[in-house]
Image (tube, rainbow, N blue to C red; front, side, top):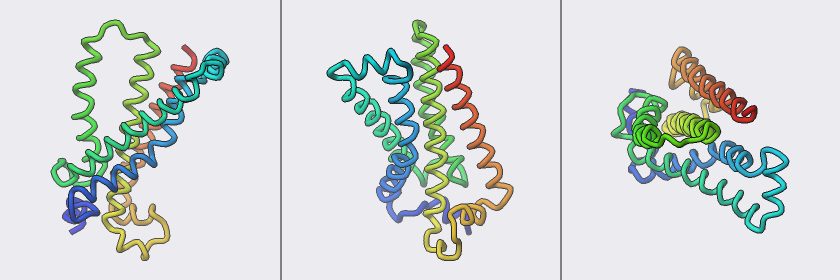
Length: 194
């Protein structure tokens, strides 16, 4: 019964699911968007000085943040709209399938573009990992929103997730998220030391 409810999603209509997923993705994307905008405009004293002294420095930084947020919200919108037709029983599997479909054209373009700088490539890979993290978190929250009427039985969302995924399923999802976070931190460390 849980799998049937999870397959339909929290909304009765695909548009409701799309809006809900877009909201969650934009919330989960705030920190990655801030980190990306900061890195591109202010990660060292030279970039920060250029950003402050340029007439378009701060607006450019805000524009990069908003562009990143729009991309996360758009990915969430697509995830929610396709929620009922994406393969997988649980949300993170659906998110991963959407992520793979999103990654294939990007990988083809990157493979054809031979003139990519190492730093640009590392930043692109970091953005890919951050997108996977945002989609995974969004899908997990969509699963808990599916059982929002049951929420009064659980004091925290983690308790509801444990109930939905069972202990072994939740530990697998947490391990998957931890791996994504460790990958993002490792790539970030490589970018900063380049």
